[in-house]
Length: 298
Image 1 (cartoon, one colour):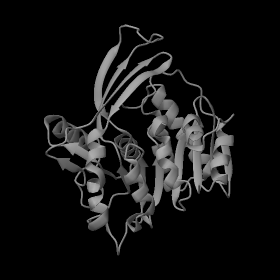
Image 2 (image 1 turned 90 degrees about the vertical axis):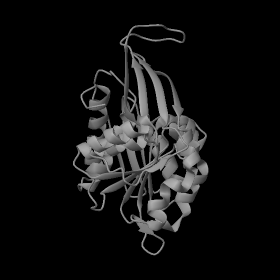
Image 3 (image 1 turned 180 degrees about the vertical axis):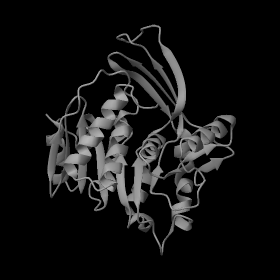
Image 4 (image 1 turned 90 degrees about the horizontal axis):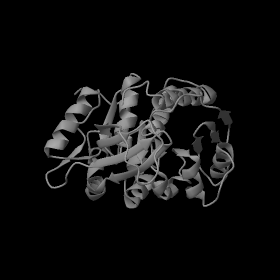
């Protein structure tokens, strides 16, 4: 891969997605025909892959095993145009996996086996702490996308470590169950949070009637910037300076896994290209709509 400086760092889960999909409505205990696919996945990888399709050069910081699954995954990442030379390769930890079942009624169930990423801990940050991407005296000053599959302790370190003091942090929880891990970034002056309404409710401990209400509440709590989606309902991007609300395009939903990652990546790419708040939100909603409609690569 190129030794040129990456456009953005994507820190978090890089794993294999095993996704079962059926066109039928599913209930607990259903046994239905469908398709099962194994594809490269993980929040950090999904964001990076979308950014690469949009013409950027993303680099991954994660943990991948030195096993056959890991070798195959690294090869797939390289084929997608992702820089993998900074990925921590472990001799002892297996490559992580994610398994999900989706029906016509959306995500039915999912299990994320990201134990190797959690066990690797701050080893994945070595290139930023004292390596080719940054040092204490010369911290990384570009964009960094972070996902909540990292441990609470590691997220807290990122929120306070001088190695990230000059970075433009873009943070997503990865799932509602991990939303509370983002609490250290609520008062962070250099972070933008990407959430769905359910995640915002968990982070704040209350219910919200809309994405706009959720975003404004989190900004009032000290967040620098918040972008909240709400499925087919209007989304909101808010900061102390501006509030923008927009509705997503109406599409036929064929898949849901990775939609939030596509949204976040498109929003980041639009802002990096100079789009204003309204245009960036519209482009992100459009990208997520294309994803759930099955019109972009997995």
